[in-house]
Image (cartoon, rainbow, N blue to C red):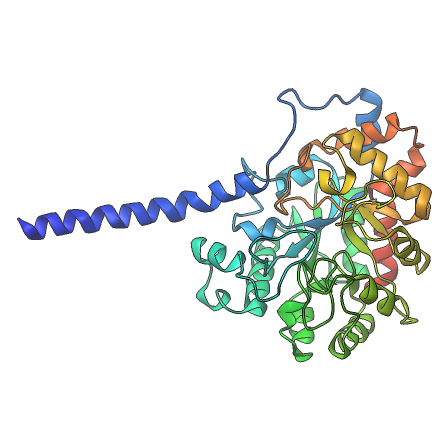
Length: 393
């Protein structure tokens, strides 16, 4: 009898564990990535939809790989997957790998030694054990998931590592194929684990964009949200990394970099950094948004400023608020240096998912932007930058 009771208890424990691992990650994602779209959707006119359908659209920032769902499948949570991106007419999406996030994460100050949110998430998702305690392996596991998706569905998803890859995607779409090009990026340079040899490891794995810092200071230098107030500048190791990225045709992303680090990178003659997901401080005075003068300097070096979709950076939760931030960016740096950096699936709430991106085209028309201006912001500027920065082949 006791054996039967113990067996029953063990079975319940196993069932409970199975239920936890099956449902808890999805529950967490729903809570952290809310979609704040009206049930009937945002209104889109026939004119806006027709314009949207002919655009070449690109977005600099989605964290969908963090959530361990097959991006080839249409999800009932989060903001992006391949079907929804294709429905939204997106041509190129940067998928970033998130590897570390400090407990109590905020825009004002975070310790690099704070407990990490991603470790329990990866354990709860039953990711490969090699990724549980190594930031490098955590990035590589997400890279492998993207590569596998592209291998499984080459008719819908192609990895972009070179200018030739980019052009092949654009040619396929011009020929009528509904296909998405994916660029792989890293949310912060800490997966390098302080070893310059890991830059080759990440490059070989397909990474073509690295944000130098995230929400904490790391081996490369200071974060906009680190412990040092204005933050440290670029470290000697950070300079090694930036030089190596320039040689390899990789995109330098300063979205979370401290002002001193931004200045140090801008002082490197060959550097042409971007801001992958941000707002404009003069328009929305959030601690998340870099000082306007530094933003101007990034654009002056040939970079692009990519406007996010969440309220902390645009000071509002509608398509109109995002459009207003884009207009503010155009006033600050000019129409040739503004693009999209949604931060989809990045633990933020947004007013529309990738499938309903036409709502932004409508909002930009409502703001009085011309069709050529909209074409630049929605993807033209991003495509031009990548075609000039990525290695040829």
